[in-house]
Image (cartoon, rainbow, N blue to C red):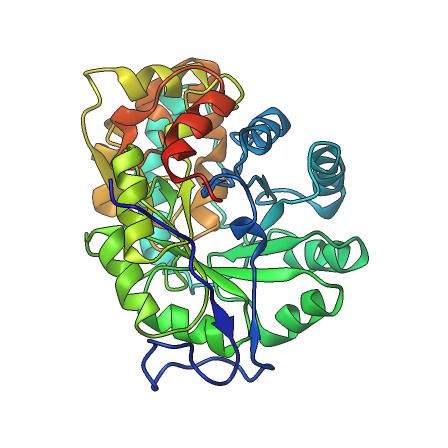
Length: 375
């Protein structure tokens, strides 16, 4: 592994040294900026895996290891999020909260109804009734932003869309750093123009939902390290990166590309503290599941999962309709979880899923990040 040292980053109207003059950033005073995730002992970030996978025990383990923990705010109301934040404060003062930013997409009702018609008999065979009417929501986004303004945390990250400049300014006004998840250079430029403090560059090989602001686009495969270099050539912001991380060598590759921290999620799915279901844990090590795919079949938004029977049957007719498809399939997936049926479950996994192992997340993070300890 090559020697790695954290480098300074700058934000402001003028680009940092070595960044092309064409780079864009929303006008702010020129200053050296240290992002919260750059101050931990190890340059490892525990990904915020919504839906119960990221538990308080998991975030505490990441913090104890010297990594940067995220409270996963997706799918939660502000009232449900609040106690998770308070519990995080009991472990560390240095953490982040992740939110889903609404990214509404018009629903093709004909395509949605066709998907419903295909799902109904399969659901019935599993004893599940589904609601054929599309359900929309904004994931309680405004209420959660209000809560985080009233009760500030060190850092808030946003995914599924780029936060509005007004939201960024509100969070800045209470001393909170704002980070945007980006999947393209265009998204990175937009985020910089809206005044965010840093970026999380998510490569297409990451497990779970893509953070893309345009869930209808085709997502081409590429190395996350290449995307990191392209983003850093466009904007002068600190960058964390994730996607396809399966080992310390993969961490090294992203740090050498210019990231100051590396996000890991799939590697923690089999850890003692993760809320991963038993069926999901077993599938990650089963020879029956040997590939992943980006699919809209489970939620209507592209997400990388192990290929199972549900993906094979419904991916060809999947529709761009998040969160309507998420709500449509939710009861079916809940029953599959109850039945320990991996063929009907959303088995989120990045391409590095074979690197996931059992044991404490604290040990996993320490061993993964130890070669790159800051100091």
